[in-house]
Image (tube, rainbow, N blue to C red; front, side, top):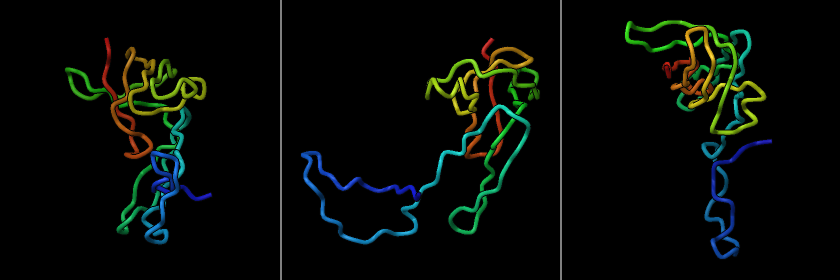
Length: 124
């Protein structure tokens, strides 16, 4: 089923709004990509303007920014996620999620479902 980025057809008072135009293709959205803690898998997705977007479907490493530079570390578990508590149980990697790595605890700073890479910063 299609996902639409448009108003829901109701006013604040609960009354119906009248449509002033038909649906357009640029109103279409997309499903949540659900990047998981799994073996590495990146998909290409077509976007508007003939461009492409890389979408992470699975990742097992994270690029950590440290004082010495960038270090690649293995992700061991998803520990906390303020976006949705169920994402912890499902091991989904989203921006702001706190993960346990081989270097210590880290917060994901990139948007894996949008940018195609998992970057983070050490918390300790």
